[in-house]
Length: 201
Image (cartoon, rainbow, N blue to C red):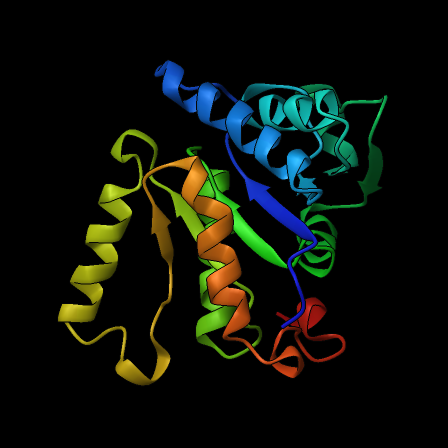
């Protein structure tokens, strides 16, 4: 697999109640910009998503915000300094986020963040792509999900032949090394879904 050039970051449209969450978002944005890796994200200026994007842009990095038309008033997209893509709906948003990214990283967030992370794990489990998927376990945020995945494996609902390969790091500093290591193990031909597959999922 070629070098990671763009990373999709899933995260909350709110800040959460632990200051470590916003701090991690700022730190991740700075790391992406300093390594000349583009950010692909939900486009909003609020919450953790706004924090990671603001940090990328403040460091002179590249950000692509992808937001559905109906969420513009709620999530208030950043209008200056980034490429803004307005989609018709959530399905188009998620498809474009997938197509424009080489890896996926989940910071803390709510139901939407969880759904986006699980969708990528599902597509990977079904053999539709092999892009790295990573959860940053800030303050143990993702511990319950990791425990649930282990529970599913123990009960044979996740089989050896279709392992859910969720990478987990405790710190933001570990994110890029983990993604790059995982990406090196993936042949370029297996990186993408077949043409049109995202629309059919």
